[in-house]
Image 1 (tube, helix red, strand yellow):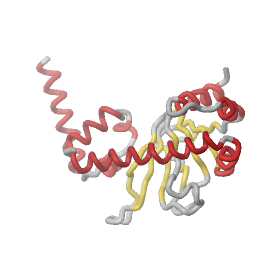
Image 2 (cartoon, rainbow, N blue to C red):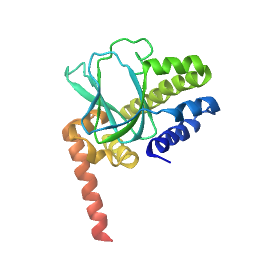
Image 3 (cartoon, rainbow, N blue to C red):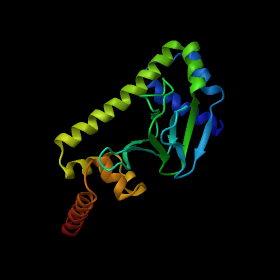
Image 4 (tube, rainbow, N blue to C red):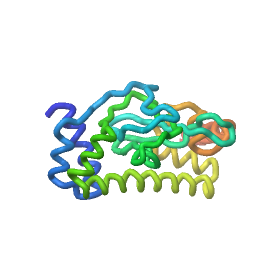
Length: 208
């Protein structure tokens, strides 16, 4: 089995956990997957351009930046990880411009679908396409709602510890600024939380 086939099977396995993929759609996904290796810092989508692709992450991490209404600078507000679909869901279907930046924060392996390919999928496999569209929107909205909940009800320390527990690798992949923007806290608060947690770990190590 070649690497492209393994990557496609991984994608199919992840999608099949969410809905029963039809045999025909499965065969379609296995035929000619557009596998690409995106180097660290490569840009997938430039600001204020029309999104033309959907991506499935096989390996690696993708970051999203949006313009802050407060600072008017592009700040990190979202990350995607292996096994997840990436799309600018609010405008992908309408082919409107999206003022967001998507880039890789490490070498990343992607399976790419063009807007035209997805249109073909919708014609040939309407049920699977509808489920895929629903998944793309709902999974994104669930994570956004979770982030909003965390910002409202969790302390700085709790937000940082939750991120460290779920996405520990992220702490070494991106900058302090990225993490602070994502967690909705100042750089100073984030650095303070990191120092507190390190000192606690150091104290436990000494006592043991």
